[in-house]
Image (cartoon, rainbow, N blue to C red; front, top):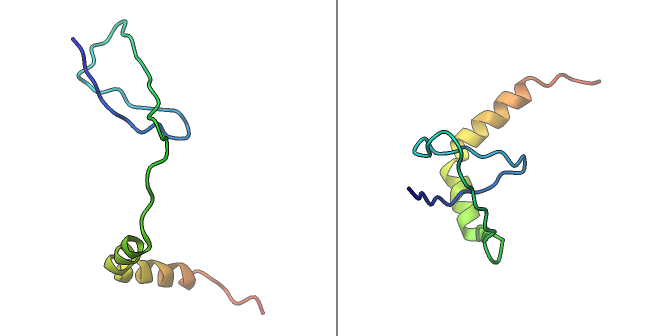
Length: 72
């Protein structure tokens, strides 16, 4: 049985093994992706994302500000 799955390795280097992989001895092969960098968002994509979630972001900001106390 051969299972191929592409996964993003997080900074803590912990990954989850799919349930389809049987328990017992297995061989894992790690192959780095050539180029290595995932393309970032364009400025237009970033603005669209912010605008799409603007109401939620504003609500969270107001909630965080409500916990602040006057220092003077």
